[in-house]
Image 1 (spheres, rainbow, N blue to C red):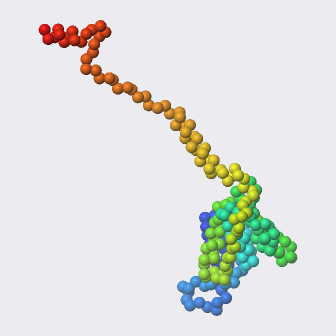
Image 2: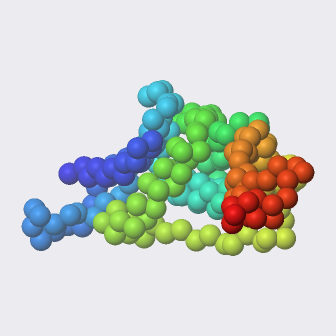
Length: 220
């Protein structure tokens, strides 16, 4: 009986097909273990069917290693490993210059021993949905339980050379620009006019008049 496992995310689906090498399992309610893999497919939301990546067990294992290593590089902002480090991998991935896309390739030999290449250009959202789908697979004990991932930490001594100082400082510059715009906006607002309070005077006298004279006249 063919076993099909699907790990679906909004922008990526990882589909595995195979069968179990177990002679039988306890009941129909038990989930059989997919231990023999015969086909793997990666579907992406912005791609058409002709661009779907398909492969075998070698494709899946290489996909797990390379994609997770690449995602680790993105999140840690370190320099990408040199291409020769992945020379034995059937899956390759690299950033597409001046875009926010990532080129994922599967290089293999067909039955005639001719080299073939499948390729898709992923958005960053699709890439990390693929990472999440792989993570769900690795945590599924009933699908290829022996499949695991071992990543070595990257040295933080090497920074991305492709990232300029301006790009690194962009968040800070954006914050300064926001403050400047706010300051200009406040400077254009006229302050409210404040009217002076009237002075309170007990009596009013005119120039040349002697207040003592008025007092004497009133007393008479």
